[in-house]
Length: 107
Image (cartoon, rainbow, N blue to C red):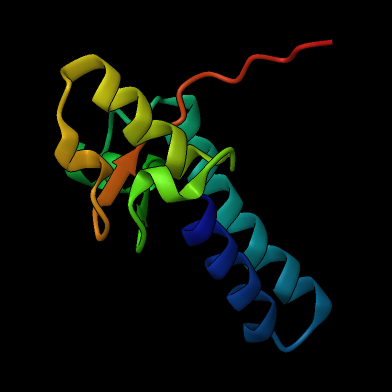
């Protein structure tokens, strides 16, 4: 959702002829995305919702070549291979789509 939202918001600032027009256009886009969040996406198709809330990353290297680097695109296939034991998720050129559903804050 972040990339779509950002591109639409930034684009709206270029469309108005006055500062108020720009703010109104940005507010309309923001309201649309707030509605999706508030309704938990119940008014849009499942495929569209998944497109909004998921991320996709392609890895060019074998998973082991990333060493101790940390990112969701690296952690997701590592965890998946632990769960299902599938070595194909570790190969180079694998595309990974994931949803970050919960963030833990450690203090």
